[in-house]
Image (tube, rainbow, N blue to C red):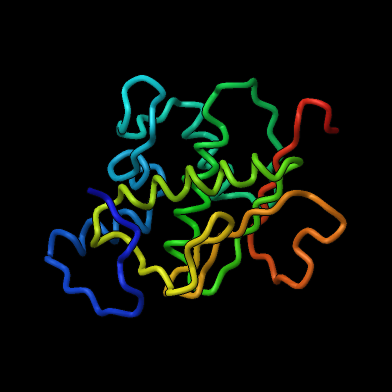
Length: 175
């Protein structure tokens, strides 16, 4: 059964194969997501994240460009794809703050829940450890000092944070 309780700041021992995979994952977000990330399908349950070509392109854009604005139709997997990218980014970069802001608090929590689901289903050797106070409905804090925070948009969103990566979710009436 997947668990989020990988202890923080514990030195892992890796096999040679795991080290090779770790380096491959670090070098290629698409490889990592395709091979190790799982998502929850509404009828099939836990499934491999089998990326569509447009989702791969979204991952490439997010990796290679500091500012990306997209317009996708509903139910195209964009939020799950970006959630995978945000998790990947926090896993493989030290001391980063990822902020997810959404026009509705429930949407922000839903995104963090998807990210947590992906994290819980990673192989243990690939997971960074979770800090003692780092797992709640709005936050994940890793032992590499990176964290993912979700908030509803307001005049105070992100106040006091040094944000490394920002993901803004708009609704159908947002411009």
